Length: 328
Image (cartoon, rainbow, N blue to C red; front, side, top):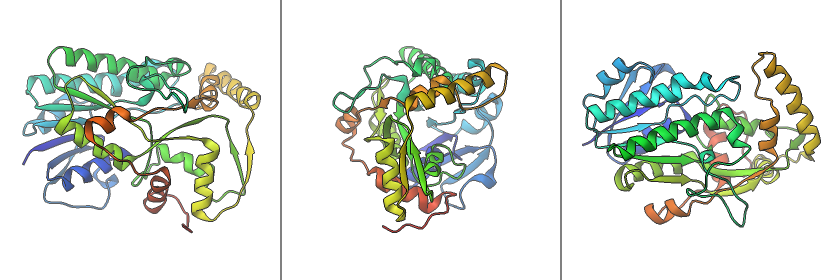
């Protein structure tokens, strides 16, 4: 039985991945910063280890008996004021993992990137793995950080490390206790009025991404990148799914682009003054675009099928911190 070292095991993807690996008969060493924050779950082939990707000594100690690695840990905050604020976790943490994989001759590493390191597209012509990153993401600090890390990962692949990149779009699913991406559910959950921006994005079930990661461990080609994406939906369509599942009938009100730009401008002023906030002109521009992708490459390589966004929302509401009664 092969042992997989998983970073970021407390997170939405990390938790789903640990469970998927155990289902597929791997032993797992899961790196967490706090064991109490992991789900209430025990398994004879699961070992939780306390550590941080910034601490190379701890990583080396715990990776000794592993042959496979999945690096999901990342700083995903959208409140940082400088690109360098991401470096400790995203750059140095990934550098630590790459160097240890090289020195220990790991069989394979799967790095978790993001869809936004690729250019997005439209519903008829969605983005794919061959498109370079595009604005407004090329001005988004988090996306820029992931672009830089991806360049480092690609260089490592060219220099002999067997690394495959899995790049999820916007994940929704169970065990998002923080919540992370699941915060979007609160914008429509149990509300009488729902305001929605004019754009849209690609949604994918976190359990499907976990399955894609394990498929990449088994079948992914060295140096290749695979988008894990599924349904391209407008924000209005996404919020209507939440309303239907919970039996809610909110008043849906569109947010006009000028209003969002004004809000973003105020946020940019706060950021200029050194006040952390997720509001910025660039982030508001992101809400106004159709950020759409295709999963064609992953489907072709791994013969995958994907759960619907409705199933992802339902599973998130069943297991996360959300107080919602499902009607359907």
